[in-house]
Structures are given as structure tokens and as C-alpha cells.
Image: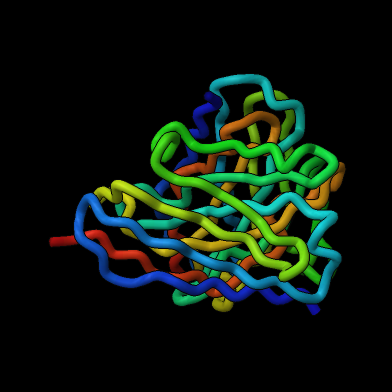
Length: 107
Length: 122
């Protein structure tokens, strides 16, 4: 089973600042990493799919990079509406495994 | 528009059983693998089970934590997927979501329902 270690567990930034979230996998998963945003009371929303591909309609301030075992999710110029929990998911092998999540707050 | 509607959750005692349902619309259900993913404050998001297509003989896969206790099934004529949960434990408590995946797509779990809450407690 591929373990996904996500960090940090929480962070607080001012609007306009940059957010960086990291996921490290215990096995090489190529670029089979997905990133989700979840707001309170809602299901997760897929922002970025395998191959660091931004989903249609998702603002370009969201991006990701990485290959192999080290992956980074970035929000440039963070807005107050970006307050949410963020998760990564490896889809390279079963069982599919999620990171533990990052809670983003705005100062 | 893709819609997924989960139902069947509620309060159940440890050791009890419950069957969840998910009705889908807005896509060709029979062409999609169907998954159940659950979420709890303690364990976060956890993939639970997957069922593939008729052409895959409806192959199923389970998380180790539910293997032997949960059974996923589907009825393509009703665009529905089910999760039969037996011998429930407190750690099975959470919101259960169904989510489709199109084989070969790079987008995993792009669509989710609102989920159904399962509470296992005496």
C-alpha cells in the first residue's frame, strides 16, 4: 500500500500570499496525483488531476508539480474564498490513498 | 449534469448491518467504475470499495479495513451502486460518498454526491 504523507496539517496566510502544500508518497507513483478542495458541508471538489492537469473552470492561481514521490500544490495570490481543506490522492495503485489533509485559514 | 444521490445511512449498533444506495444520472452509468469513499474526522478521507464494468465481470476491490464485511454491487439498469455493510464497527462511522471513474481518464473522483452519514454506536 502506498502511504501518502501530507504537510502541513494546517496553515494560516494573508490574502494575496502564496500557499504551498506537499504530499510525499512511500512508493513511486509517476504523476498519478490528484488534488481536492473541500469546503465545510460540501463533498471534495477535484481541482487538479493526474499529470498536474488543472480541471476545466478551476482558476489558474491553483497549480501543482511533482513526479515520483514528491508533489507540491500551490495557490498563488490566495483569496478569502480559498478557505477550505485540501487533500491529495494517489491513483497509481490500489488501494487508492489520500493524504491527511491541510486546513487553510486566512489571517 | 452529473448527479449522485446517496441514501440509506443512519444509526446502527456495533455488529449490525446497513445497506447504502447511490443513484446516478447525467452520464452513461454502465461505462463507469463506481467507488465508495468515506470520511470521518478521525481518519479523514478513505477509499472503501470499487466495482468495475460488466466487461470486467463486475470485478470488485476493497480496502483492507472492510474486506470480508462490506460488499459492493451495481445495477446498471437502475444506474445504481450499493454498499452492503455487515458486522459494523465504531470505526466505520462517517459520511459515505459514491463517486464514478471512467477507465483511462486521468481525472479521479471528479464527481461526488452529498454523501450519507453512517453512525455506528450503542
